[in-house]
Each structure stands twice: as structure tokens, then as C-alpha cells.
Image (tube, rainbow, N blue to C red; front, side, top):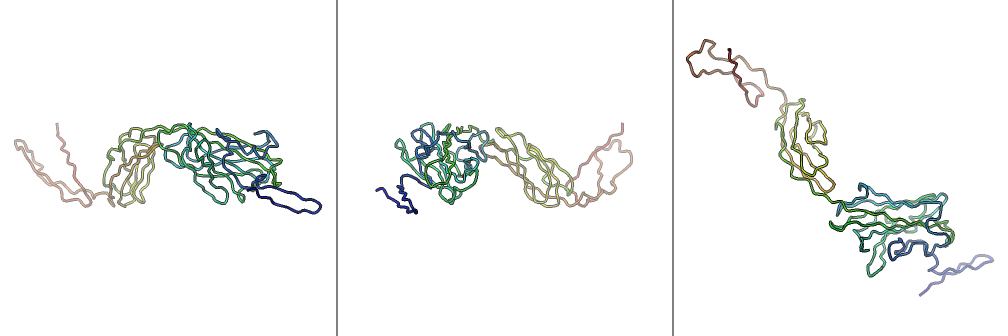
Length: 313
């Protein structure tokens, strides 16, 4: 049923129908296949003929390549100098014009989700609400997009914007429309991280090297040290300095798809071992004797001993 609203103004009577003007967004106006744009109502000017612009941006995608299942903030910005109010519509479709991934609302005071049946598919659109449209010269609308499953392939964002003059009618407004293709990032997860090489006990204040062999498919590495230890690296090795605490050294091999990690439990020695005492044993010529015993007293702080024999030629 069509509703009628009667507005009385001195010396004039203006009648609007509810179908003549909507201050909140409606679905099916993104300009995607089978859909129109906001110009179907705001038709004074040709599409994209105004002095303004519409653009789309993302956070987390490199070169508009998505990792299946990952969530990205998507921002649509409509700009036009002097315009006091803006609207938008956004959807993402597969090559078969099905919903690609899912949209979720970040700020319900500015945006909402609506559905519209197009070609037998309930296409989900993000669009504006009334209170979220006022902003002089430009307005950005942010929603979250969760990428579709692996194997979906290339998808496309379709989006349209309305730069209005806020005269409570569909007259005098400029409509902008564009699209953005997004390709699926095909990659293999990093291989297994081999055991970390390096001492399990490090002297306080002494720099020690820890390393792993290169990991297949990894593009970078992230090292995590015990609390208080210092050192940083994005490669397969790190120079770490203990502060006296014990804990775990961890390294993660990273690429755009996932991570693979390995770890090593370490402890700290508070100080270097004491200087060994005198060696006890015969200093006489030992010719003809196959075995001779020499020894030193236990050394404070030692973990092991290394013995070397020097032969006089």
C-alpha cells in the first residue's frame, strides 16, 4: 500500500509519496550485473558526471589479493566538495554472481545490511542509515568482509555512492559508481620448523646465536624471546642476549596463508665460571707410561669441562 504524507507550508501544499524519497539506503543499487544504481531515483545528472569521486580501500590485503577465510576491513569513500550528506551501497559477488564471502557491520549507527533477490539469489548489500550520512565534503563507510573459501577464485566488489544536497528530495544529487576486482591468493603454508640450534643455557649479558634451517614457503620469520632478553630478527637466525631469566625461545615461519612454529626452552647462567685452579699431576718425563692422570678441583659455575693436550714436538 502506498503511503501519503501531507506537509503543510504557508501558501503552499507539498505532497510526497514514500516511494519518492528514502533517507536510508536500499539494496540492489550497487550497479552489479542485474542491478541499477542510486541513479534510478536520483536521476538529474548522468552517472559519474559530477565533480566528486568514489573509491574503495582495504586493510590487510596486498594488491587486492585475498586469503580464503580471512577478514578484512573494507572502506568506501564518497567525496564531493560542498556536499553535506552521502549514501552508499556495496556488495561482493563471484563470477557466477553469487554472494562472495560475507559482510558484517562495524558501526551500526552508520551502516546496515540488506538483502535483495536478483536472479534468484538473495544478494547481501551493505548500505547507509540516516544518522550515518552527514559529513561535509566526504564520507567514509567501513564494513568487514570475510573472504570466501579456497577455490572460489576471483570476486568483485560493486559499489555506488550518492553525494546529496540534503534538500529532502531526489533532485540535484550526483551518483557515482565503480567496481574492484579481488583475486584469490594461491599459496602453500610454511613447512615444519626444524629444531632451533643454540645453547640451552646462556650467560647473562653475553650475546648468543640461535638459528634454524630455512623453512619451505616461508616469506619471513618472527622470533620471540624470554621476558627481558633482547634481540630481534626476521630471518632464520637471531643474536639474543640473556638478562638472567629462563623461558622459551620461539620462532614462527610466516607467509600470507599461515604460520609454522618451533621453540626451545632455555635458562640463564648468572655469571661465567670461576677460573680453574692449578692442574695436579706429575710434571716428570712420562716416557714409557701409557696413561697418566691429571685433575683440577671442581670449578664454581661450570656446566662441563673441555680438556686439551699439547704435545711438545
